[in-house]
Image (tube, rainbow, N blue to C red; front, side, top):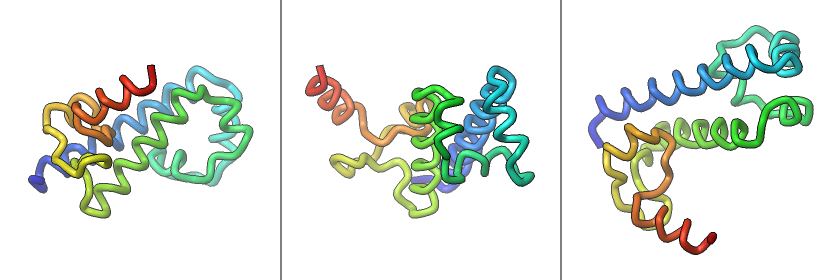
Length: 118
């Protein structure tokens, strides 16, 4: 995959992570207090720490899933596996990654998984 595109997606993932954390801080006093009590760190690093029970209670399950998916995508970038479907190993189309930068599967595998889960 094109290095320039991967760097663009990496920045997009980091920005998305910062946005989620900033929204959580502004919309949730418990989460804000937890973040303020932590050692000063870059926002992008906060969700990478082990999320303790208080933090999980303070933020919604959807946000936890999205933060984990973003961390997973950032990890895949470091491993050189970003943009490859975890099911079939094919390249995930760039359009899909631009829409969902933390996508793990190509459209075909994701559709098949969703059908099975109905």
